[in-house]
Length: 101
Image 1 (cartoon, rainbow, N blue to C red):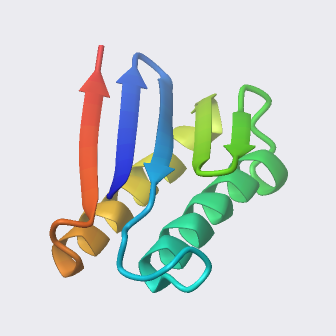
Image 2: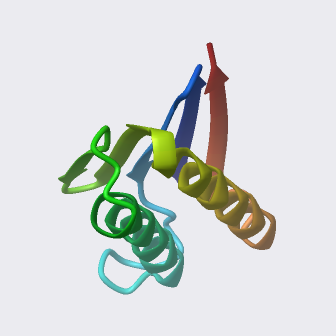
């Protein structure tokens, strides 16, 4: 299962995506590809298009995360919406958690 944790604290927002959807083998899974592609689009937009100086991106084997403030927070909200729609299409393969403080 893909776990998507979205955080919001004041003017800072972020996400961490981990896991595998288990629809197919690693490297052949369309849901994992969709989630990874969307996450990287958000990360690249925040860092390279919006040039948010507060953005911090981390990409590891099965983990992608972003924290940002200022310009990037709306992009994090957009990814949350996208993940919610994917979760409706693939129930049981994506767990979404929202953490606000």
